[in-house]
Image 1: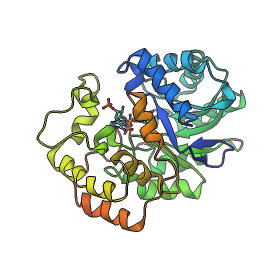
Image 2 (image 1 turned 45 degrees about the horizontal axis):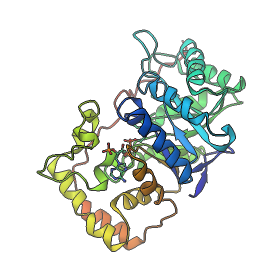
Image 3 (image 1 turned 90 degrees about the vertical axis):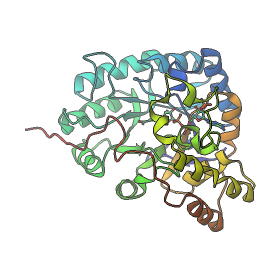
Image 4 (image 1 turned 60 degrees about the vertical axis):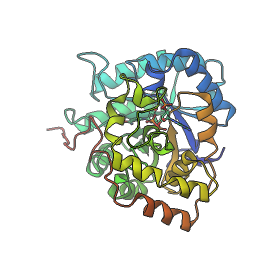
Length: 332
Ligand SMILES: NC(=O)c1ccc[n+]([C@@H]2O[C@H](COP(=O)([O-])OP(=O)(O)OC[C@H]3O[C@@H](n4cnc5c(N)ncnc54)[C@H](OP(=O)(O)O)[C@@H]3O)[C@@H](O)[C@H]2O)c1
């Protein structure tokens, strides 16, 4: 495994990290969750990403149990706050932040997380109130550092400007893959200026970039796309045009002596703005296969061949991730 520094923090994170969206919040049975998490440690992965909202606490609870077998100083733990935990519990108000961090720590069976991330921007709460509440979480020792996910460049600037002088953001969590390149513009630029690293989600486009979904064919029965529970997002990516373009990557990967997954992960990690690619995995073999991408450097010829193979593939995605808003509220 290789490690990179997370923004201006003193955290070293593994280039490949393990996430617990969908898979460990109900989709993957408890035994497989434990097997994948243990496989991550075996493969040298020491950075784990979850959220209070994944399975409304279920993903954090599962990891609380499994991670209790490891020394706390041997892994970097990230969680998030924003999405609904009940009809009334949601967002980034000071009350919610204070309540949700305590609930997350209890489920995760730890006294602190290394990284506390705003899962989205809360357009209803004045940004000054959110930043003050986040600063309190850091001051109390419940989180070491702060991050955000899917904030627009303006929201990022507003958050940084409103942050009390003793705290700042060290990480951003955007969706980023060969099929979703939107952050390469202003999002990367603003974060670079402020020494904020990216830890990116769905680097395999939910498995699509492994090449296992074939145009015109039924999806594999044991895949995310086959599960009713999970196929909401992935469905948008399963167009014939996208799947045909992905198949054109196969000879590129073979030519480089790589698997499709390695090619996709090495592609995101080519950017120095990234600290880590957060993978999902439903089986331990996938964890090992994906961890092997750390340290792989793609040649300029391979990078060119990737762009040629993908051509103008209609990128399945959205300008902002689901749940995001570009509004900003200030204290009156
Ligand atoms: N901040 C946000 O808003 C946000 C949003 C989404 C995700 N995330 C974070 O990012 C993490 C990763 O997201 P993701 O799960 O979409 O990532 P991903 O790595 O793009 O997709 C993971 C899925 O692809 C399949 N897969 C993985 N490796 C494979 C391999 N080697 N061969 C074949 N199939 C493979 C598996 O699904 P199957 O085997 O079931 O097909 C796996 O669950 C999440 O767990 C979460 O922590 C954050």
